[in-house]
Image (cartoon, rainbow, N blue to C red):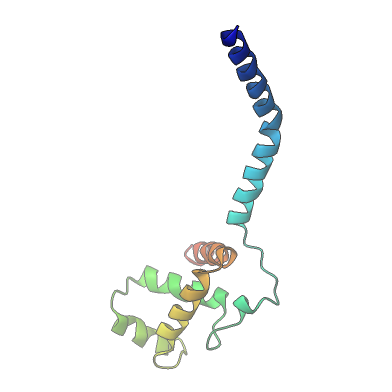
Length: 120
């Protein structure tokens, strides 16, 4: 009799899992969407420019540095000054945006989308 009881319990648990599958899938999809979101309130301080450089401009600058093949800090620094940044600003801007992206997933996603668009 114990074997049939175990089988009955297993079938009952399988039925419950199947009944809960749509809710579990919806929760997983919502979590995935949140991880991919680029939505940020325009008034969120995370979007405040760093030394006058917006996240959009930072993505453009990064794409330009990558496409030009600049490898050293000196090359990037000289180029950034030619682009109108103050001496030393590019590193501070990069450090600032990278720090913000390290704690804000939607900002990281937004940067990625902007960088991809700028790199085309």
